Length: 146
Image (cartoon, rainbow, N blue to C red; front, side, top):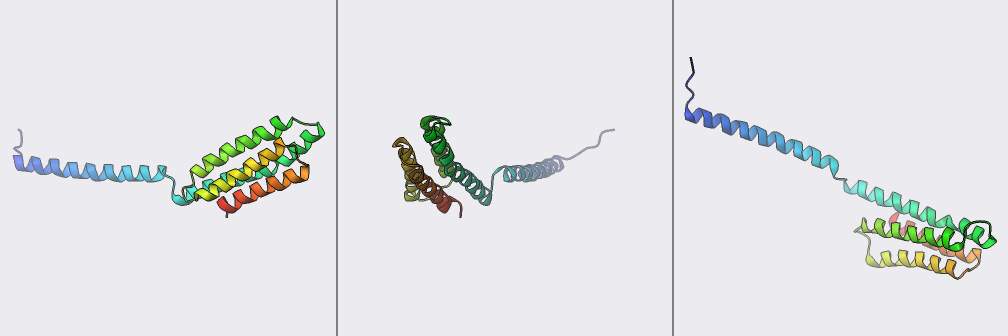
């Protein structure tokens, strides 16, 4: 024997089910979305970590330059200029993830890397090259890695 359920009761049940499903779906969507989007602190930490790595890599190029000058390692182009260009590109991508960075500071950091690159092209002394590398690394750390 079938039970009679009024139209109003069916409508109420349907409404309650829809509201419960909407609440559960909203809560799940919020939880999943909240876990996938990095927080501001995580984003800043990521930029700082990458900038510190770039500054370290730049400051280590004096060894490659010394070997290139002595003729015991790669050429200046392969051992110094190519890595400097790669680090400059990585620096640009890192700065793109740092919208809080002023344009003047961005330019100063890129100019310091370009100055080191030009010093290598000009085959300056090892000490002069180290000064340029140190200045570039210090500027990167000062602006991006407090």
